[in-house]
Length: 70
Image 1 (cartoon, rainbow, N blue to C red):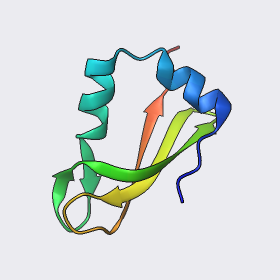
Image 2 (image 1 turned 90 degrees about the horizontal axis):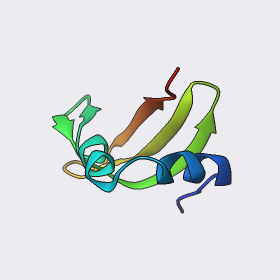
Image 3 (image 1 turned 90 degrees about the vertical axis):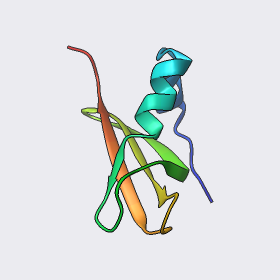
Image 4 (image 1 turned 120 degrees about the horizontal axis):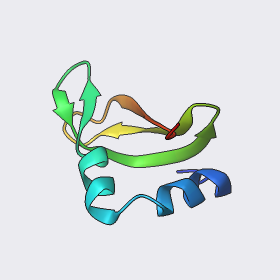
């Protein structure tokens, strides 16, 4: 079950929707290469927002860090 961290959600909300879509569809999977992340949890990390979820193609675990500005 996906987990959404409140601080991470606030940071995510500041990102324009068209960029959010690009970030979600530009995740690396060891099996498939570039993919889309699905069923993801959003976690506040000291470096930014950490997305942990599944590859849309093969369903293996993938993650993406979206670094904070600054």
